Image 1: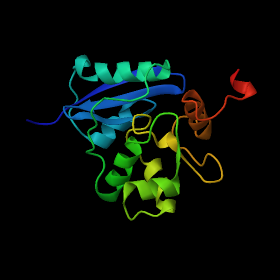
Image 2 (image 1 turned 180 degrees about the horizontal axis):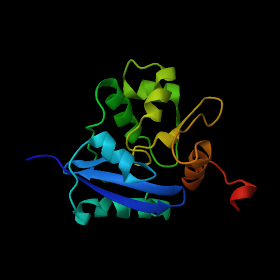
Image 3 (image 1 turned 180 degrees about the vertical axis):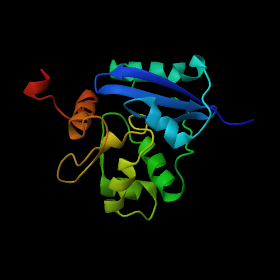
Length: 170
């Protein structure tokens, strides 16, 4: 059977978010439209809203503050080798917590040095569900390439209770 993909788009508090779900699970997500995800996957698109329903419902519940653990199956097809090893370890970092780049390097058991972890985070094909926003620098938030950059990361970490709200959030 040939692999196919179904797309969904949803409005979130951190911007328009798109999902790409294959027969095996969530393969890609990100800010903006589905065009970029489609290009990355290169799979024929089918119309099957039921396939994306669970992932959309989980993201809606996450943003409503009602979900802390995603159960949506992951299709790791856009990752391999040490990159997959690091992202798999990241997927286990719990809601409301954060790890440093160096800690994630150690947790992954890979040979990727801490400075290489940032590059992997920047190319994470499944942000939020595979929570690259939970990786911080030892001296602050570090970078973030999704949404509006570091402000999106700050919003997500505040939403999860890792960071305290500022006066701007009230």
